[in-house]
Amino acid sequence: MKRAVIQSIRETLAPSVKDITLERLAGDASNRSYYRVRLKRAGADCEGLSSIILMKLNQPDPQIVSEEISTISRTFDELPFINILNHLRRCELNVPRLYHYDENRGFLLLEDLGETLLEEKVKGREREIQRKYYRKAIDELLKLQLRGTRRRSTRCFAFQQVFSTRLLMWEFEHFLEYGIEKSRAMKIAKRDGKIIRKNFKQISERLASQPRYFTHRDYHSRNLIVQDEQIKILDFQDALLGPCQYDLASLLRDSYLTLEESLIEEMIQYYLKKKEDLEGIRIDRGEFRELFDLTSIQRNLKAAGRFAYINLVKNNDHYLKYIPPTLGYVKKNLEKYDYLKELKQLLSKYLEELR
Image (tube, rainbow, N blue to C red; front, side):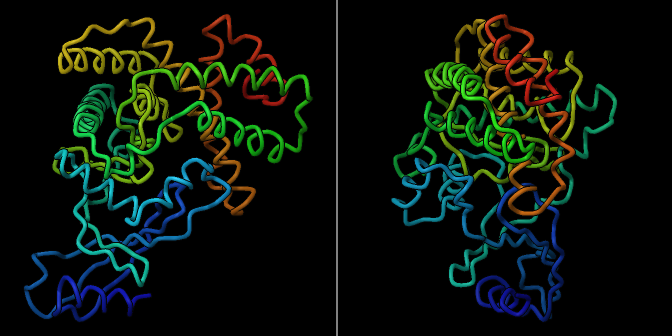
């Protein structure tokens, strides 16, 4: 691969590059591979670049892509990542620049935004530091939601798909299949499954009926980079339209780090106040918080199912350690509402984390 990358850089970005070093980056639970490419050049014609990021494309995993999204994807003749990147750049969001897409070789050359994830900035830090960076992340999220939605374009992939009841239920089903039945070798009883799915459908229908905003879909601490004290956004290629609570829940109910409940509440109130000021509206706090909690349940169950899937299908057990804290969020939220008690009781028969 190294030879192909050098050739691509010489052809499109820096003709005088003599050699490179490739450093594999950890990445997240996606199906793509990332490398930091450090340039060794003969002259100063690399636009001052000393490194770039290479994103190597892999075939989408058919078992984690819903039929609905697959159908829409086939109607576009442009890579979703590039399509959505262009939309976000038009909206003046902090996203990396694309230097080159080498379609034949199957990789993209992107701006290197550095190595400091939001996770690293806030994990284990004092409350004031966490508050500072989560406010920045929420400020950028509101730009994403409001600018991204207002500048609607039929050419943008994200506006062709929504968090419909069908898609939300597909993710719930993925959790039941991999998060319970396959990973724990347990068959859900027919009666239990019927009631669980009835509750899941009610949650899905309620979320699907909310006003729709541009939704990143994976807006959490490992997809946000801190560079020059600004939040930069990564991995937005799966964007669609969904409830505004979804990305906020992804950020504050993050599988990779746990925030104090009081800080979560503070950040929700910060988000609401800024959203009201920007949109000139009044938001019902109680209803918003309930929708936030329901979204968190759906999002966290989907994540737990995904982590189990990665272990079972891809033989990668790295993400198993994140399942207990993720289900811990679900337990807290299920316990808040009387109408979810039956769902909690049934799920707890199969998930000790909910007991």
